[in-house]
Length: 366
Length: 180
Image (cartoon, rainbow over all chains, first blue to last red; front, side):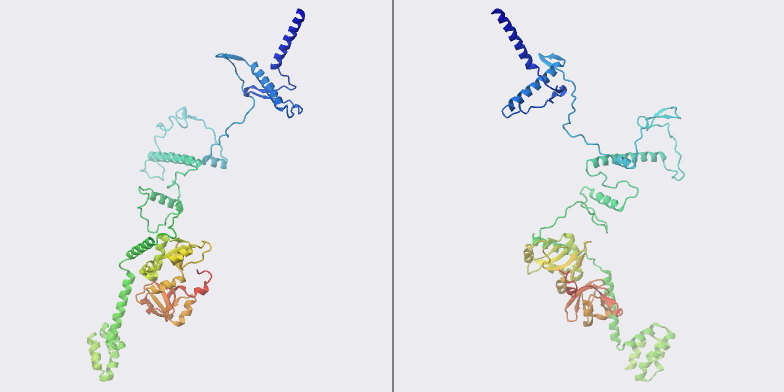
């Protein structure tokens, strides 16, 4: 009984042991692939469709998950462990499975204007050493940067070019040129930034170019005009200057059926303004008036004379002196001769006094 | 259709004042009701408030004409008077030219008025002054621009141009399809 019980006990203990082991050791036809760093296990064993039946599906999946998790945990237990504050901690190795990143990859930095140009032309960047051997100073000098600019041992004398103005300060010229280059570079840098951010380019005014076009100058003028404290409101227009186009201003119109009386009032105001602006003295009008008056006077004079032809001739003879008297006398003599019949006496009288000739001939008529 | 902007109003008034001077006031401020200028398809129409309100019932693309067309704005924003404006120019015209019966036809065919065809002309007309052309029976025929002053007209030879043709009532037949 006792022996039997011992055997039984042993058998039971063995069974228990097996049961215990079974709970932690899982048998698989194909070994799982582990990536302990990611706590990942891949089960490549085929799934039996019989066990994947309708009722047993849940049980099967649960047991499969348990088994595989058990295997993963076993793998974790194989790692070196330590105890931190009464908790057993295993250090996971580096993950081997490459996982895609959560965020999209960062965009490439947009190329600057120069980089675009260089790419187009195939210009490649050459690495230059910063230090260069200076033959005269017999030492290594920097190409740029520290102690490069204010090096007064270099070029303490500049030859004045033959074409240049001898009184010009070449050193000052050089410094201003440098300053301008720096400023231009800064401007280009800002414009590169602005271009990448799709903002407005800072150079809206007159950008320094060799030959600014008419368009650029126009834009510069309009920008300069609006760059006053009152945004160009009180800026006068040049005589033939046109309003700048494409300023981005939206057209705004009055409503079709609005305030008719105010519309009328506005138009009357405009008419009043137009009337007041007319010049007081119109030269052509004045000249015309003068001409008309002269015409009238002439006509009146002709009328007064009665017989036009005679009067005119008398006038002409009046202008001429002495020698013409004979001619005038002939003309004057004809009409005078008819009534009086004294041709000899009149010409002499006319030649003596030009203006008086008219009156006398008239008198002769009567 | 929309009201004219200040700029457009000024351009149009300047052109109108060449023909009727300050009489534009009588067009703007009328005792017999409210009249206004409206722009539609670059053309300026003169109409009463009542007609305007009726015209709003018609969609923009279907509206061909409303009221009286005075003229149109060119693409360069200049204003050109049309012959349809003659009804309003003729009664207020400050400077007139009468053409002889024989020249009437020539003028109505779109020719300039020569000295030989000139019947009468308003005294004091300046050069390039806008004038309204009448027949000797005082029927308005069109309008144009004086090529010579009244003084010069007396002196020039009969074949020289006295009035430049701008518009005449013959256009109602000649340009029937484009006049609105």
